[in-house]
Image (cartoon, rainbow, N blue to C red; front, side, top):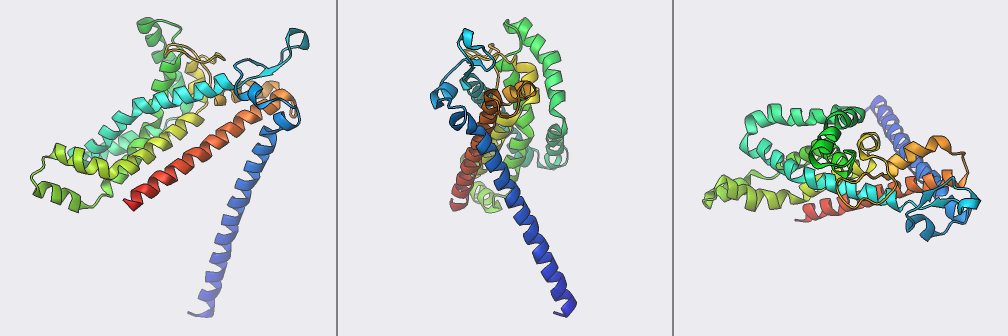
Length: 297
């Protein structure tokens, strides 16, 4: 290796190191900033943990004569969990069936047309999903099932479509990565295609499919605009699919323009952001555990 190549090698090595170091510093800085702001309501404003996480009253601007401000984020947290889980439950069977259809039942046109068509859904802006949901889905739910239309059902259906490309893409890649020896051995034993999919390919691809579903759940948990447009933004815990509700992301986007930095109200919104960050870490840990289990298998 001549001197010029050695020099280029060192430049590339240090440039890569600086980029990685910058990403690490940015990540640590963001985590520290959100954590310091999110914990201020407990240490600076002396609001108890139970009044924030176990309280259903959200009245951050209530006067002292009316009982004082209340910062219960339980309705926001419950709304995020219910809507996200409902969206994943709706999307999971459709995603799994679509992935197996693309890879095993219609492999020629599936890989050329169907998978790119599904992936196009990921390129549609979330505001368009919200607008379609508000214009079409909400009136349909209101006229068919009753209620206001803006509801957990509407938000779950919109989110299910939004997370579909993520789960289908991950599941499809995982099924494609399975060794051909699985199919050859299964057919050699006299299995039909249905038996191959149900008893061989699905168990083998299950860790990858679970990873896709968890990624979809993380996407649904962090979505703000589309959910905000069809969920109703009512600060109460939903008791049925037709009830309106609200989420952590909706709470932050709706209230952040009315608060002053450092005020208890503003700190409560940062606490919601900290909860979202912790949930993201939780999803990442689950994905790593599921992926590791798949590799070990």
